[in-house]
Image (cartoon, rainbow, N blue to C red):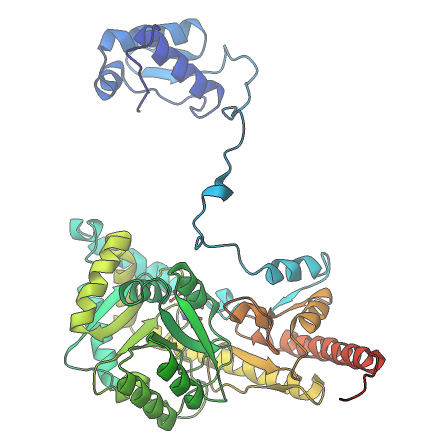
Length: 505
Ligand SMILES: Cc1ncc(COP(=O)(O)O)c(C=O)c1O
């Protein structure tokens, strides 16, 4: 127990100790019946004599705030307690932290999301299709419990030390083998474990991009990456996508015009659109990156969640020059709570990334990585993946059927072969917020286009995440979205019809 002592103050030391402990007892920070440290122990902890502490304890006993049981110690008692004074230390005026925030300090989530939750009916059922995350109801809780228990049995002091910034070696080896199986093993690559791929994005951007420098990504783009880019004070260029990925013509133009430092793409089951880049596009993008000397960060977050067709090679598969950094995670295939992801990067860069990672949090959470490693060794991850793939595939199909039945004619949507979300494309100029708000008012929450734009500008589209809702809810949601869209389109048309006609000049 550390008690603040002021040796310059006029108040005797035993009185200072007495008053401090009395405060803690009155504020119930020290609970009724709690044992105070032995006088000798407390005296040595705070650098006073034992008799000073004994004097303080005697004073507390006289006040009825502690009782001493011979041979057992000194215990808090509430018999002498007067009504409790206010809990918090009164301050003269609140310090204005807003004035001290750096320009790039993170702001709260997109305001439109708060608005949606507020618009949802407070009583009625809400179908929340906002988050492309594993359904918590499918989490392999029993398997993780069993595995974590076994891991704890094996725990040694090493696992309780600061973890290596590279991560738990046996799991790195597992991932190295997995990357090799998928044909992504360059001999000069190294694998670095991180606390989720989000931390991976952060470390890579800190290492490669200085404030003001340019990062290229997709429009719409993953919000979490956009937030990292913003915190790094990078300039973000979001380029248009077609049904596969970034349009190459737009990428080429930007690479020619700007001094681009990093291309960030999610080539397989892109969040939010679910789009997947085929080999021809992958080669074209790599060739452009090679010609302009720009590294690519390939986010493979949803790669293993394929529901149909044969696996598509990653960008890393075609990477002859070592300019692709590949990012993976267990967050979507398994669960996000243990925070385990990985970076596969050329050794020379990986070394620097491991230093950046060390500066950020001093190392890995070894225990979490041990649990994941053992889950893998026991085949639990593969079994789990098999199970959830079937469920998510059925949910995707239910949603696609629902959209087919209920969405009005000019509206289109993507049909992803995997991942956890799809993108509804709206007629040009309609924006998403109107329809998304209408749907929220009827209890269906989907993510508006504004979330996926770096400046928060609305886009002509919205994301539906289908992984956490049951099939009947997805069909119901599609019907509600269809109604909201019809109203929004009619509303827009009547406004256009009512607008004054101007002579064409
Ligand atoms: C495209 C993409 N990348 C990265 C992440 C971060 O995942 P995690 O940090 O849990 O690995 C997410 C999370 O949703 C994502 O959608």
